[in-house]
Length: 68
Image (tube, rainbow, N blue to C red; front, top):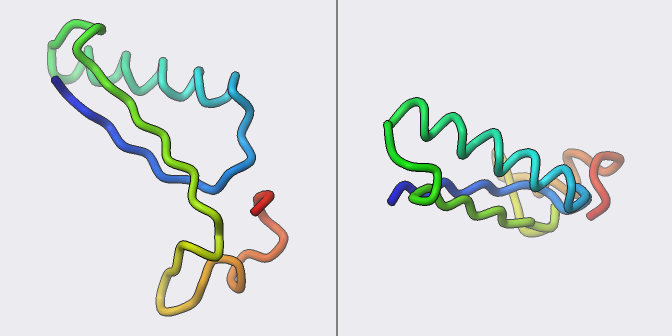
Protein backbone atom coordinates (compact mmCIF):
# COMPACT_ATOMS: atom_id res chain seq x y z
CA UNK A 1 0.00 0.00 0.00
CA UNK A 2 1.94 3.06 -1.15
CA UNK A 3 1.19 6.20 0.84
CA UNK A 4 2.11 9.58 -0.66
CA UNK A 5 2.03 12.58 1.67
CA UNK A 6 1.93 16.12 0.32
CA UNK A 7 2.33 19.25 2.42
CA UNK A 8 1.38 22.62 0.96
CA UNK A 9 -0.03 25.97 1.93
CA UNK A 10 -3.82 26.28 2.12
CA UNK A 11 -5.70 27.86 -0.74
CA UNK A 12 -6.24 25.19 -3.39
CA UNK A 13 -9.76 24.22 -4.33
CA UNK A 14 -11.19 20.77 -3.80
CA UNK A 15 -11.07 20.30 -7.58
CA UNK A 16 -7.36 21.14 -7.69
CA UNK A 17 -6.62 18.70 -4.87
CA UNK A 18 -8.66 15.98 -6.60
CA UNK A 19 -6.67 16.47 -9.82
CA UNK A 20 -3.42 16.33 -7.87
CA UNK A 21 -4.45 13.10 -6.12
CA UNK A 22 -5.47 11.56 -9.45
CA UNK A 23 -2.18 12.47 -11.14
CA UNK A 24 -0.09 11.20 -8.24
CA UNK A 25 -2.07 7.97 -8.07
CA UNK A 26 -1.56 7.34 -11.79
CA UNK A 27 2.18 7.99 -11.48
CA UNK A 28 2.50 5.55 -8.58
CA UNK A 29 0.47 2.91 -10.43
CA UNK A 30 2.71 3.21 -13.50
CA UNK A 31 5.97 3.43 -11.56
CA UNK A 32 5.44 0.77 -8.91
CA UNK A 33 2.93 -1.52 -10.59
CA UNK A 34 0.30 -1.58 -7.87
CA UNK A 35 -3.45 -1.34 -8.43
CA UNK A 36 -5.02 2.11 -8.22
CA UNK A 37 -7.02 1.05 -5.16
CA UNK A 38 -3.79 0.38 -3.24
CA UNK A 39 -2.53 3.97 -3.53
CA UNK A 40 -3.25 6.41 -0.72
CA UNK A 41 -2.65 10.15 -1.04
CA UNK A 42 -2.70 12.44 1.99
CA UNK A 43 -2.80 16.19 1.45
CA UNK A 44 -1.84 18.25 4.47
CA UNK A 45 -2.34 22.00 4.42
CA UNK A 46 0.09 23.92 6.60
CA UNK A 47 -0.31 27.57 7.42
CA UNK A 48 2.74 29.59 6.40
CA UNK A 49 3.44 30.53 10.00
CA UNK A 50 3.80 26.80 10.81
CA UNK A 51 6.42 26.15 8.12
CA UNK A 52 9.99 27.45 8.05
CA UNK A 53 12.93 27.27 5.67
CA UNK A 54 16.44 28.38 6.47
CA UNK A 55 15.37 29.54 9.92
CA UNK A 56 12.66 31.91 8.61
CA UNK A 57 8.92 31.37 8.68
CA UNK A 58 7.24 31.14 5.30
CA UNK A 59 4.89 33.89 6.45
CA UNK A 60 7.97 36.16 6.49
CA UNK A 61 9.58 34.77 3.34
CA UNK A 62 6.43 34.69 1.18
CA UNK A 63 3.97 37.24 2.61
CA UNK A 64 2.10 37.72 -0.68
CA UNK A 65 1.80 34.07 -1.76
CA UNK A 66 -0.93 31.73 -0.64
CA UNK A 67 -3.90 32.55 1.54
CA UNK A 68 -2.37 31.71 4.90
